[in-house]
Length: 454
Ligand code: UGA
Image (cartoon, rainbow, N blue to C red; front, side, top):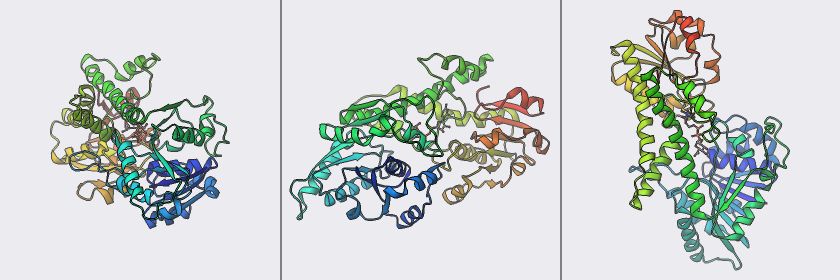
């Protein structure tokens, strides 16, 4: 099928490259010429493991352009995956979505095109985009006859750092539209994934437990709400583990054991129960906020979602309190943070717990050293006002420190020879911000091991 993807951010690029890999003819549009040039050269503008390999494997079906005129006409499906940044009041700024919809309408010429909202947009945006498309199309002087189109929602559930596997081997695919023909087109588009009939990319074999993928084919509003409801649920699952973690610390229980014991109940499930400094990233914070805002338009409170947010921001404060409990005075202390990115395998710093923790330590007079395997370049550009020192080496983060905090559980940190660094520290306080290190082993090596929850 012929596919157009508008926006080559995380979501758009992963969608476009994956669909091209599956054999569809895909044109990706981005207004940023530099990005398009990079992608044409096979280089990926974001840090995402495997993306450049997939670009290479999909190259013959993939075109990048800055021109809507080149990409939209003739497309069976147009994915709109433009950015929806938060406006000042926290609501999503939909001006890029509006601009994209208007320009798509100027270029529709096919007998039937499905325009798919792929960005996470507020509930009701499908109807809004539909109205913009119809108005803009009606105003066209060169309006061709026999052109039909409909709007659908097809939320994505990919995690940064795992984007390709989450797209090719998803738990489910959700498509929503109030137009039956759109659902049929999208069903056809995704059939290779639904039936798992494609040959896997050479670098990413099909997981042994991969089965046919369930398709949730539903109405527009339900598809839009599924995305928010799922993200908010994951966020509150983590916050729940963190809330229980605080009680565990008081009663002398081990939260890791508690989470394991809970997670083995299949009704609960073990994933997203990992306690620590809490969730960050571009999605959970923004989506929980948007869900609360949408509900308030209907005079509804979302007490559970609100509590998940409160618990999450408290976790970051608790990390600093733990250091204060150990060191008493933070002023003048040197503290190293391992990990800046909001989670491993990404250089994304949006709402990263490390930034809040660093700012809070600096505000209390501590000197902060930061280390990350990939995110320091981005940090320099995006956080010029955060006055911390960037360590190039692991030795340097530990050297002379009063405490070191593991904030992001990068594999290379977990695999360190931890015996080598304890001697470099002024006081060997090690705060495990993710509950991933072996406490007994760390204590044997001479660290004063503490964790966020206990
Ligand atoms: C999240 C969802 O997992 C995806 O399904 C969704 O598509 C995406 O948002 C989105 O809406 O675009 P992502 O934000 O990339 O994906 O990252 P996650 O792997 O979900 O991690 C989010 C945060 O939760 C990270 O800061 C991570 O460290 C933290 N986390 C995760 C925990 O603190 N504990 C856990 O047990 C799991």
